[in-house]
Length: 192
Image (cartoon, rainbow, N blue to C red; front, top):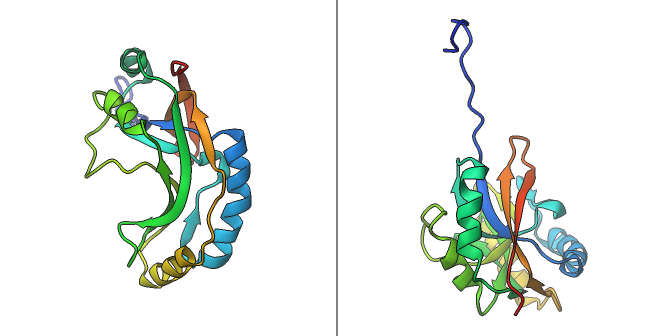
């Protein structure tokens, strides 16, 4: 209870911090052309598509920390890290292709795992293996019908072309209660 106000409780605003890499403007424009094709073939009732301003590749979740507490630590962990070349490849689904609940594009990179390892000290433990990806949509519950459509779409050969970029920074984001993301700090990576 708040002191002096016996009927009012103190509401703590929780932070939902995470570290991510944003696509370049060029890749965003390619995604803007590609995603409607995916939506046309795979949309189902109950599916929530990620809005373009929220497209990112997550490196790790930090959770409920005060940003000023973690920024210096993250800066120190990233100070020796170089820019990262990434490319988007084929579409896939979590937890598996038979009954996906999440549609995503695979991210291919020679050194993103090194970047992920560098920030592990401030991130929550990762459940399972780190799989770099860019989420396109979420659906609850997961769907076997979506799995059939996804496998057909994968075999159709429809894929995003030339979606490659050089990530020059890592962004500390906070997930806000309205579902939007707020960029709190941008950490520059060393030029190769």
